[in-house]
Length: 249
Ligand code: AMP
Image (cartoon, rainbow, N blue to C red):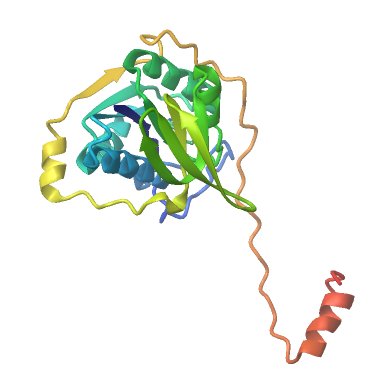
């Protein structure tokens, strides 16, 4: 079974981001970039399926600038077999990314596509769902457990009221939640081996996809800084302040 995993290059989660002076976006100059954490979980899940003898090939795909090759190499070091970079310097919205991924799905014909539930830079949480709509594949979002039996994938989903388990006919799309697995670290030998694994570069034009955006970012701002809290001496004082100052009870 071929598994396709979509991975995004994002600002490392440890970095405190800075908004550009003109409020047009985030300043990415000299900022540490990394594989989106939910995409790392997606790669790990595919590698585990391969280790179980269920997946036969893992293809990773990323849409982004030339530098996104670094994140594809990381995914290869974690155990993916080959990589595809859809090279674009544009700030593409989710629908454009989903259309590009659909073109790769058409070419590669994977049985399972794994994506992160969300990219931590834009927090869109929609690419997997849009890809499911475009391909007509079944979708299991926010997965905390994935099990494949024959041509069905059982996905346990993290929902507000608890855990929901759904059975999807393959081919299917799964998006990963935090508790699905704990990704491994790439070993040095595997990082070296990853340098020799195939990495193909294509463009939106070569895939015949129009990536024109229908969404324009008007302004990006830092959240207002929180004012300092106060310590109260007693429960009575707390209740009094909640009642008369905060007026929340
Ligand atoms: P989002 O809908 O943007 O929050 O992203 C959800 C998931 O879609 C990510 O975790 C990736 O698996 C995939 N994805 C989003 N953007 C890209 C991209 N530029 N390249 C590859 N995969 C992407």
